[in-house]
Length: 139
Image 1 (spheres, rainbow, N blue to C red):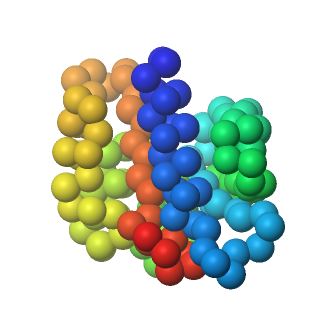
Image 2: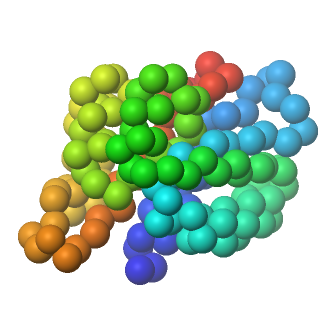
């Protein structure tokens, strides 16, 4: 759990770092697009991340949330929803985004233990991806 938390903080921090530009306002906003089941988790996690980010950088940040079914969210992002962080509950949804060029085709190799479908149907695995460039055009 501690490793997962660090990975999520790192992912959001990476997305936040890419969102700043010289013309950025005093507060930067990130859009976290996620599946419905994670709504309460991200409500609490995003609040903790905002406080952590302010403490470590001295900058304000706002994390907006968008929640729906995982595949519906993947389609919305592929169709142009400007997500900074995407959290899906199946690897096939991230593969769908990779096929459409939204995330790197080799996204699996960038995560510890190379994510793969769970061995048992009762398991769930959360896949997180960030935009290669921010909505402001910076990398």
